Image (cartoon, rainbow, N blue to C red; front, side, top):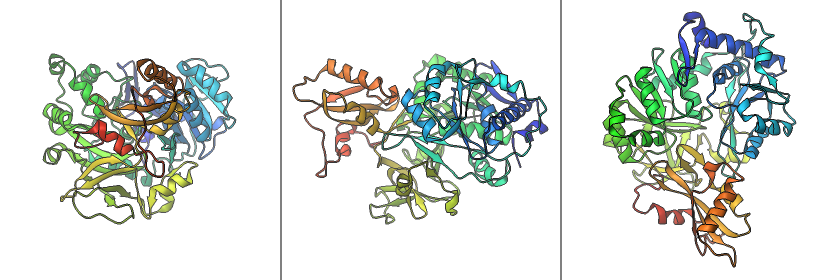
Length: 521
């Protein structure tokens, strides 16, 4: 069995985590001790196997100490997207059945109000300062001896929230087997993931993105599973990322296309002054990468560039730089452990190269091991077709089995690597008295890949124009996370709909995506 304790015994002084500008550095010995002592605190607070801990932190010093404490005590760890609005955070805390809320003091005001309206919480804990009504983690740890044994260690899990097509985020929950922490059955997937990219114990890995996303938290935690070193940026800055690659001798990293766009937008003298030759693996995912941008990155970083396609729910294809240059625009072929299927509307397999259909992946043979959307049996059922599941994309395979993405069943927007479902935005905008009808879509954005665009039919007697556009955008930003709100609004006499009244968004998008080979990018 392999846990952080394994590497703490093997090499306690080896650096496990470096945060920011190296203002917080943590060895494997320190990570083991802190996570073990926090595990004591979790048990003292009454948490039991299978309970959920909601964690309202940014890329903060104790993030992975708490993460591993949960993973050593059989708990679900749910990171909360700190960019969300208060009611959205409230929903996640409530829907996840969180028994404990851990929050950073910088989020104290919202955390206090959320906790007051969350009756299922058994405890509230603060880090980084005091929050009214919360217990300070520092005080709780003062009662736990440095060498206190944790006792039985049970493997925990992460429960992430993926955007929901109904406007509410969906908790992606996998069964939690009652097995010892670090059990080989749990580690197989983690070790397999990093092995695809050739990442080993000797690597130094850079995390440039927020840890509440699936890939950043998954890859960074995997580094501790294999005994590597992870460098975590507090916030992304393109030049700082290059500086860290040079000074920290980064060998592996994970990105989204927006990072690439901002890196390539730096002046050439800035880009060329940093030595990035140590970088062997630069994985990118989360959103389709425009062909010209990826060509730039391969020209700059060469064979280090590797792309994979998957969702929070699972799945997976992989394509390396030289393959991609022969199959530009592809997201690759399936990696070990599954086959990509293209199905028509009736669920029949499409075998004709180039013919579009719904993309499905093979689910684990053991039904009990499959993911489910927490408290949404209908959504879970609609995701599966027998032993296959979908994450809602449309695409095709070519004659060599390479997958190309062309659209989304779900109308999801991916902006800067962040998933946005437009129904939530539409639901808020349509409540404005000056709005008769509205459709929200993703439109091309050179930096973000896509940006949120609203097409509004004004109410009778309302004059469209810049003033109304500003008013509606402000109204939206007052109610939901800013990144979900439209950057621009177009006004129209009607929103195209089908005979049954459903929005014909594919038709609407054609106006904005004309001339683009893919309707995703």
